[in-house]
Amino acid sequence: MFSDSYGGVAHFGMWAEETADHFGCRDALEVLRQAAARKAESDQRTPELRAALQYLSELATRPALITRFASTLELADPVHRAQLTRAAYDAIERHLSERR
Image 1 (cartoon, one colour):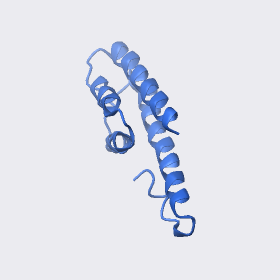
Image 2 (cartoon, helix red, strand yellow):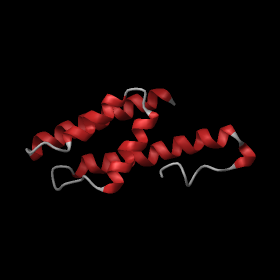
Image 3 (spheres, rainbow, N blue to C red):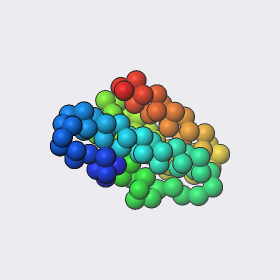
């Protein structure tokens, strides 16, 4: 879903697929970032967020980070949920940026 719109450029071969993953990762991270920013306000467990988590779990070599982000969405206290969701997002972003 996230890299689909960037991939499939047969002429450039492997380079194009790596670029598609880069842009797909960027887009999926943006979905997580927005959810983390709004988490205290409302329930962010949308189909788009679930798709972003799934996509990133396939790219990450540490899928526990993705699982941790998903688990923070279940917390009842909105302030605590917002803090932990942001921290989990930061950890995912750092991890994925190290891989680029």
